[in-house]
Amino acid sequence: MADDRTPTAEDRAPSPGEHGATGGDGAPAGGDRTPKAVGIAWALLGLNTLGSAGAKTVVPLPRSLIQMATMGALLAAFTLALLLNVRLLVRPSAFVFLLTLLLVPSVISSADPQSGLGALFRCARLVVFVATLWLLSRWWDGGLTFVRYHIRMYFAVLVLVAAGLAVSPGTAMPEYYGGRLVGALWPLTPPQIGQYSAVIIGLTVLLLMGRRTTGAGAAAVIVPALVLLALTHTRTATLGLLIGLTLAIGSLVLTSAAARRFFTWAVVCALVAAVAFSSALRAWFLRGQSKENFSNLTGRAKVWDALLAAPRTTEERLFGVGLGDKSFDGLPIDNSWLAVYLEQGLTGVAIVAAALLVLGGVALLRPPSLPRACAIFLISYVALSSYTEAGLGDASPYLLHLALAATLLAAPAATAPLPAPEVPRRRIPRWVRRTEVT
Image (cartoon, rainbow, N blue to C red; front, side, top):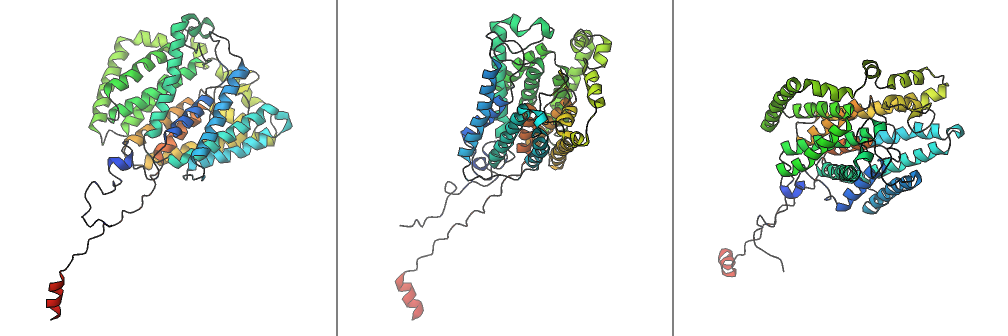
């Protein structure tokens, strides 16, 4: 039996601007609510990008075992994403489309027999990585859900690093790394730990400024991450954090009083610290290196010059020599652009540059908001880090950071218009109708 009463507020579906339609993050959810298993798939992608080479651990872990764990995580992420998105519904994404185009030079160069089986293996890994991003794009709606996944994932990694430091301080800060913090339970290098620390510090600061987390919760993440960042002595991560936060907060200054207050206090504290602790900051920044060693970027410039001077065929210039371990003559390249040029050629460099430009352009065109500020932080951090770190041409944390920026810049899915409430017909007594007829 139909209910003739007038619909109340409890019966009405939430509008796009209400809490029920935003998932609590302030951005319209548009389509389906994000299942919790999506966060597990995102964390598995992060586990895959941790890598298998690094410092010596307390319990020696065979590299083959670590590779099985990381590759198993990628396959598990793809399988889980496929189970969650059986209908293969995807959101349009220029960033993931450009990553798909990047597979073309990767396959062409890696298919060369001279590249070896390792190149084909890495190429297949990149294919599965991009396919998983496509499957997860169904839940990209411009909200902050994936930001929380990102912070939790890398905070768990930092907890593992801190546990290794507590268990074996000598192993966690070895002399062969100059006393810098490394992973004692899982092989992680100082730049990796510094990168994870800087990224979650920046994102948590922005969430705190946007009142999306409590002060106690933010302090529980920021304070230990800052300590670990200081112990890594990672200059790239520190500069990326400072510059990225400056740009992100600057994008909110005109519309947010909290951003203006934070920016003012940050400038004052920075000036005081620069004056009071100038010698200590300079010693930390130089890490005991000579001016000559510092000027050539710890030997990186020599590797870069040798890589650019090496003879290449036209095909190698266009498509590279195949995906490798980001090294040249046994030495790390430590530059994303030169690594992409070596492995995927000028075609790969153009595609990666287009991906960064597209994300940056979309971020500039979006109106000021907290998701936009988080995206600006991630894009600027990755762009700065690309000069001294490799990874933009392969499955890596840097591509995952940019994918997170793409989730923040995705337009919310269009919601179906709410049906108009049915107005109950007024019942006219029979004697009235007889009177009118008469």
